[in-house]
Structure formats: structure tokens, C-alpha cells
Image 1 (cartoon, protein in one colour):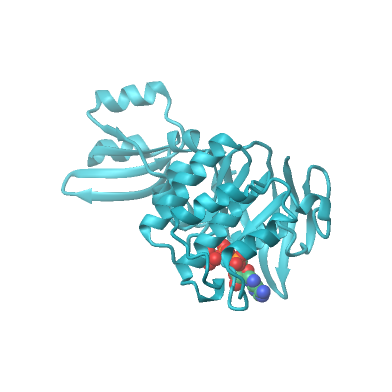
Image 2 (image 1 turned 90 degrees about the vertical axis):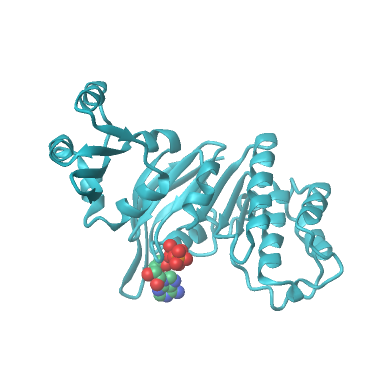
Length: 294
Ligand SMILES: Nc1ncnc2c1ncn2[C@@H]1O[C@H](COP(=O)(O)OP(=O)(O)OP(=O)(O)O)[C@@H](O)[C@H]1O
């Protein structure tokens, strides 16, 4: 399956939550959708999942508009911070209902996940704690095995061991049953190893979409003698700098050529890696970053 988002905008009265967004998702991979608070992640995902209609532009899934399209929507699962206060069913009853409209649903696997998360199968879901309700979303999302599975900050309230189970089971199940998985998150440093590809959204616009490894290879930290570092990074996009005495460390964004790497070495400068979290923090705090990256 594929998702095509074309010139998509979503406006709330005079607030532009999404502005002219175009991108595609074509491969059975795990996509990390990263953006600051209010960047537009939930707005975008809820349009893809057909929970909302855009103001203009389009989303198509396998060439069809998903909105009110049951044939397409049975293949798309959207898991979010759902309010379960009226859900008096227990988890097994809930899953039996879901199984009816999810053709790939695997009840045995769901039961295995329920055990992993130690969820009480007798208790009504509205009596579960916040973290347990999030685990319910994970069980539903993974066991549905929909070709497109979207987890929008689904870990809310889950403690560290529960999140760890989620990440491990996600990777394991993705290996056995590859599909398009979109994870929106703020927990960048904790979840970065899950992503095959990364999409940054900033102030309602897509900043970049790139393979995780190739994105990381574009960032570097140059450390060494202050004057030499300053000269070296002059022509680069500088994201952050720190200085201690005569030693300076500058985070840069942009591919370094072999010649530049050699030059850095000759000058005694250290070229270090940069984490996705660093890139995320500093790219999204730059003024007019979308112009700088285009
Ligand atoms: N129903 C609404 N009415 C008016 N503005 C809204 C509405 N829903 C969202 N917005 C605004 O749209 C923008 C994008 O919100 P959205 O929830 O998509 O962001 P997000 O990236 O998911 O944020 P967070 O990480 O904080 O959950 C925000 O400025 C938000 O205030």
C-alpha cells in the first residue's frame, strides 16, 4: 500500500495547523514522525486515518481517498490517546469486536501481548490505569496487523518496562509481518533505533523526510581549537555551539566530503557523530529552517 499526501492544508478558523504538505510513504518500513508540540502531527495523522477532512489538498491511499471509504479504512489502524472512560468491556470483549472489521487480526498474538503487558482480562477497560489503557492500544495496533498502522504518541502513561515491551514486540512483529508503521513521538532518544525513515514536521510544514542512517550521516560535531573550528565550519549550517576555554564544539548539518574529513584530521579537529535527538532539537529551533533546508 502507499500513502500520497498532496498539497495538504488544514486550517482552524485563522490558525494554519498544516500548510501545503506534500510527501509519500511507499515502503513497508517504520517511519518516525517527529515534531514539537503543536507542530501538526496529530492533525496530519488524523487526516491520513480519515478521522478528519483537510481544508484543501488530498490524501490518497493506494490511489483512493480514504475518507468514508470502508474498503481502504479496514487496512488503516490509528492508535491514539483514546478516552476509554465509557468502555465497560474487558479487553477480550473489545478485541472480539475489533476482530470483526480487521481482516488480518491475530487473536492468539493479541493474547500473547496481553500476557506480556500483564493486563487483567476480567477488568473493564475503563477501570485500567492510563498506562494500561495505552498498552491496550498497543495490543490493538500490533495484533490488527493492518498494512498501515499509525501510533500517535501511544506510549502515554506507560512506564519504562512497558514501553520496552512495546518497542521489542513492534520490531519483532514488523520483521515477521512487514507493514507501514508510523510512530509519532517526542521520545526521540528512546525510540530512534526503531525508525527506518524519519519525517520532521515543523510549524505545519514538512522539514525533511529521510532515511535514518543517511540523515544521521549529514550531521556532525566538530571539536578542537576555537579558531580552527570556526574557520572549518564557516560555510556550513551551524546548529549549536559550545565553548570551554580555547576548545570549541560546533554542531553542523550538511554532508562532509572526504577531503573535508581529511582536512579536519590534519588540523587535529575531531569529527564526531550527532544524535537524532540533537538534530531534532536544533533543526526545529532554527528560524526559517524550511528555507535554509530547501
Ligand atoms: N480543534 C482545534 N481547533 C483549533 N486549533 C486546533 C485544533 N486542533 C489542533 N489545533 C491546533 O493545530 C496545531 C497542531 O496541533 P496538533 O495537535 O496537530 O499538534 P501535535 O504536533 O500533534 O502536537 P503535540 O505534540 O503537542 O500533541 C496546534 O497549534 C493546535 O493548537
